[in-house]
Length: 573
Image (cartoon, rainbow, N blue to C red; front, side, top):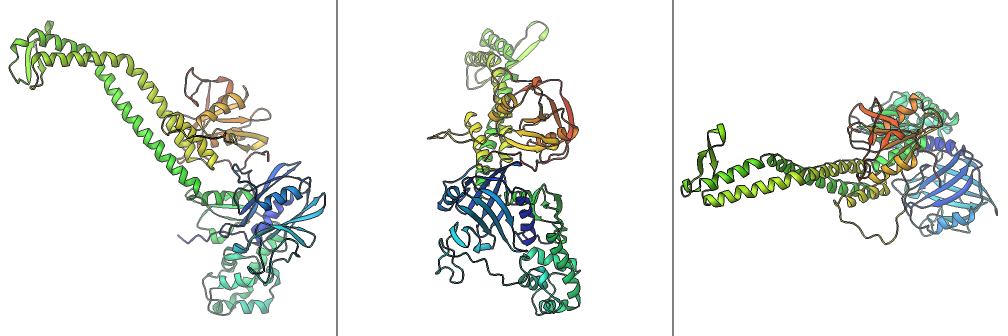
């Protein structure tokens, strides 16, 4: 399989993001958060609801796009505090991107006058800067003259845009293309270094669209210079005309690339149309962070839950054996009585004693422990009888409890596997604590919980998904109304899903909610599975049942493939 080139926020991708952010022009600044020291999230409130602009200047993951509201955040650093104080009551007046440049400018009308938040996506030189007119007010990363004599970024100094040392895609004429097609380097490297805002992905794409192998030495590509120029112009026209088709590319269910339009460079991957450019970027970085703190905690909780599952299964086997043995309890009593009656016939160190049986049973062979006397063997049989009789009373309840705990642990494993944040994992961790599978932590203060997942469904409906057993109860019996549809994967552990629709739910709404129920279940890695749905008023919680345990009746069933909803519902800042 061809190598997958990691995507980046190139000029085309950023143009698509700029259009999405521009749709929120006129929205009011509604706060700022910092998920980590190198990122800010600016909340905007407008007629379209809340939007959250995520900007990271991390050297390896620098990016800017719309994103869901962060579920966890650190205390605001000085730049976050500056944005909060200077942008209070400000409105987003406009959004611009210099042609094919990796710079996004958000102009705000603030109480003290115009302010501009500039996000520069340039690898290790990325930054987020607030300016008032030509003067820098503050920056997420202050750059001193010692750090960069060419371009310091300091409050009180004039703002200097990043140097444009290369022309944009429409700035290369035929003569310039002859210079590009020169030298031993691969043609894609020549294109990337000659044109502003391309990056490795689009540079390779230019070559592929010109029917040139991107690794071909540039000198050999002179006959294809015209085709290369036309391919680059076609890509540039996509940005100019805003003909974006945001696409997420998947490999074995994980998003491994994104693009603002379908690209040949990713032809070996599975393309999936994205709800927006921002959504494709967010999904990529969510899947890419598979070895971060969230994944580490996920693996630790999975090991804990799987160990608890194995322990419960062993206990179930033992108790079912005891229950089966308890059915033979009367036989143990009879064997003990016969041994006492015929103890004088038992030879010393005998392994068995043959005695007359009851009624038509004929002779009966009683196994003996040769190390014990006949009376001691009889006492052992009476002890087994007493134990079996006690088991007949206690074991069925114990088996029911273990079955319920096992079902709850399977559900926890689903919640852990589908967790997307530390808050999601914390909810599952609490379930493990209540199941005595994990030692309870001492919490000095209440932890904030963002609540269940919410997604948009067709027709303006909302899909609500629980993240833990207790949250499943909350979704089903507190968030859902009596007429809302309740959904669950049939016969599988998983989340409770509620479909809240403005009117009678359509087939498209039901299917979208069923796909979510399938995804947030044990069957998410398989093909089509059965999902039951029923009006919430027909769902009941048995008395004394564990969180997330319900019964229901009158259900209908639909078979769907597991699909994670792509679009989160509108959230509060």
